[in-house]
Figure 1 (spheres, rainbow over the protein chains, first blue to last red):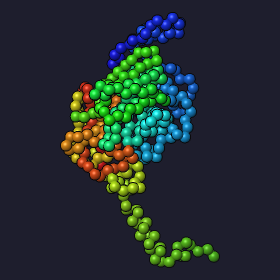
Figure 2: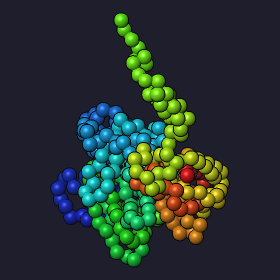
Figure 3: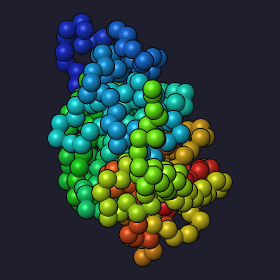
Length: 199
Length: 141
């Protein structure tokens, strides 16, 4: 899936050389930062995300609508691990460990998506798309700590750019999404096609 | 001398309370018509759960084709790899109504509150845009 690794050279500082060497040797793999502190409830792959390394606060508690609705039916997420991502200018977006081992879920009013934590760390990004009559189309998801920017390309060729916050990103658009691309701190990029379903 | 509470109440009041208790005991827990009412609990109103698909397919979609006033849809993929799956609902005309695509478990509701909405017929389906997989779908109407 990785499309290109284009790191601009010319930096003589030792730390930059190390970063470049690691990027080349890793064949496109981007290791996320190791956990630095323990947040109650989070463990393993989640703690590799900055979002889970901060203490839980009152704003992280899943809302009543979510807890009592069908989205979380079947105990699909560990609500005690939930964190609310402070994504600017969008609806509430919560992230929590999935009950299925090795999964992370993000949940918003009216929708939920879960994916493999390992895939998030390997690819750097986990995405979901949603649509509903009378509302904009949305592309939302999670990124590893090392991702610094996410771009959504629409079918008309226009592009939307956002900077992830709390390991999360969210796009709301009247257009139809075509491709997501993201940029790592070392300048490498990756991309994946996205869609809104449709038979 | 202590008296019971019942002995202090008129017979008519006791009868009214008894009737009310009996009515509440047999009433359904959820309001089946949340589409136009207020005060429904989040996610309430559903009277039908439809487990559809199960085994097959892809690239393509899977549905049992039955039309209901679905308000909730779920697609679950348990296999290996990271395919994209979609839980979606469409009108009989084929136009999309609501849905969510994601890597392993995708759930979506017609309304933000996830209450049932008895207004429009939908067909629900799950979709694998890329390769052959097995998925499980569930819709609530």
